[in-house]
Image 1 (tube, rainbow, N blue to C red):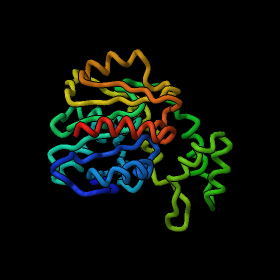
Image 2: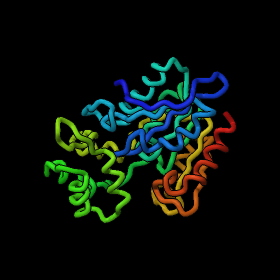
Image 3: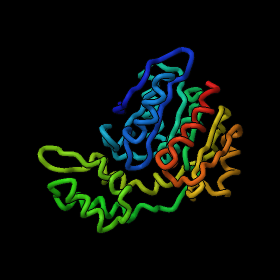
Image 4: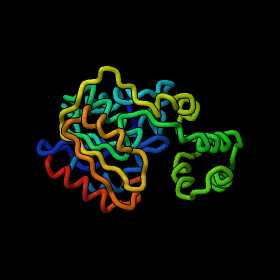
Amino acid sequence: MRLHYREYGRYSEQHPTLIFLHGLLGSSSNWHSLARGLGDRFHVLVPDLRNHGRSPHDDDVSYPALARDVAQLIDEQGLESALLIGHSMGGKAAMWLALEQPQQVVGLVVVDIAPVAYPNRFGVIYDALHAVDQAAVGSRAEADAILAGYLDEVGLRQFLLQNLHQKDGQWVWRMNLPALTRGMPEIVGFPLVNSPVYTGPTLFIHGELSDYLQPAAQPIIQRLFPHARLEEISRAGHWVYAEQPQAFSARLDAFLDNF
């Protein structure tokens, strides 16, 4: 699958290309500010993952499929490898590619996620999205009013509304809502079966206020990624890079200085 992507900076033999991968229900726009800032030093690619943004839709939402798409993007760019930076679902896709095709991943940054299965926390969010989908809304304001009946957090609603666009005179979701709804067991899981390890440089960044990276996951991380470092960012929740952008950029820059 050929992914739609944003591009910043120019390719350089001195530095690896960076590929940023967004989380569930996100898009390439989530990384825009950070990726643009790195474009003066690195070649940066930020794709919309399958079933998100402007990329094609498909019933397969599995991590092997997401990883294949990213591997194809690396090949299409004529690259031997890239440095992957992934948040949440994007972090799992990045880990899967690193474990399955380590020769294509020169370095790995995983943001507030672990290679483990999680409970499905998205039930009410999907209820809200389907309610908008079924209402034939006439404006973003109408969609927001429907979302507000399910979701109190304004920031979350604004994040979701980035996916709403006009098509053939109607407001519709860009993401493949049916496939993502059906595929939640795969998305919250992580299918490890006799997995190899990834021995490249790896950084796990997580938020102090987030519960996505539990102590119980750390032995699994160390087994699969033996050179991993874990770093916590104070006063940050799951959306680490958006909630504490300066602290996140500082940790990322320190890691990238080695490349």
